[in-house]
Length: 159
Image (cartoon, rainbow, N blue to C red; front, side):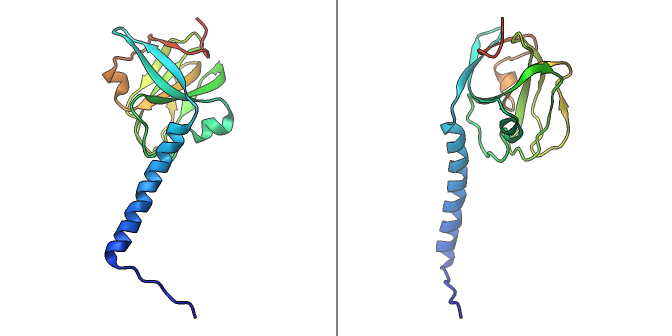
């Protein structure tokens, strides 16, 4: 017969809190520890730089920011689709609201979808052929005055 270990209630709460903390920290560490490249958006007021993970493969693009509980303010994720084409994004299993910035091959912003809904299966279309999508925290496009037509600087885009 197996014996059952019983923890005092305070120890149980401490253990659950510690596990939750490790979950959050591990999610942040994965993001913070991933290789990043600067993605610069030239706004009408000043350039804004997001240190961004670059998703180049289909498995990377499929995973994206799914299940991550946190994204530091000046971090982002740039999805490279390898060719200009109509793109459809969604937020299934994405825990944080995002602004999605759809970018043409020449680096100009075609469209911005602000404040996307976490865990939604609603399709978010590019509206025209684009080469890439930059995801940043919801509200930052407005905060930094990022608008359609602005230019994005990264080796992925030609001038």
